[in-house]
Length: 170
Image (cartoon, rainbow, N blue to C red; front, side, top):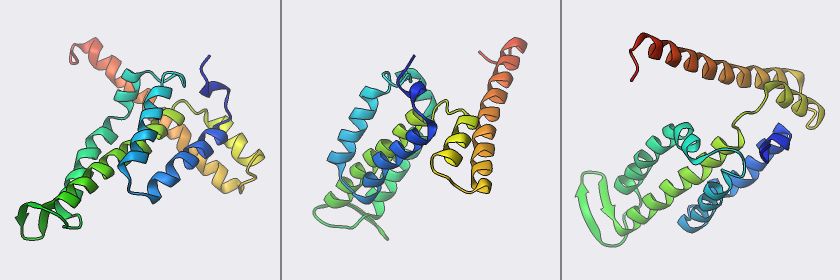
């Protein structure tokens, strides 16, 4: 039994807010790097292996260089200039901002993948209504969204198995 299976889903969501909010407010590569390192070290303790974490966070891993490239090209130009074309200026400051943004995207996204993995929609609804006493419409919407994510995952796995059975998937 892993650490996350014993926690209430509301606790997991609140932990994600506690971890993510300071990272959204600061543009600091060091604090984001420390948070990212702790997330990577605690992932196996939480029951999410590194292979599973890499598969589930593929969209985040693909978006990270895009965020960094846009910051490198269009960040505040200060310091030595390496490249310039129209509005794009690659400077020392824009490169340090790009690194900070890339680490921050990973530091905010990977804990979400770790903490929100395997949340039972019914337990989430119970926690939202009983612990936080949120309105019924919001609770029903959250349960429906969580249920749709689990349905999408099971449909995706069924399609993968059927493609493999037909010899279409290697």
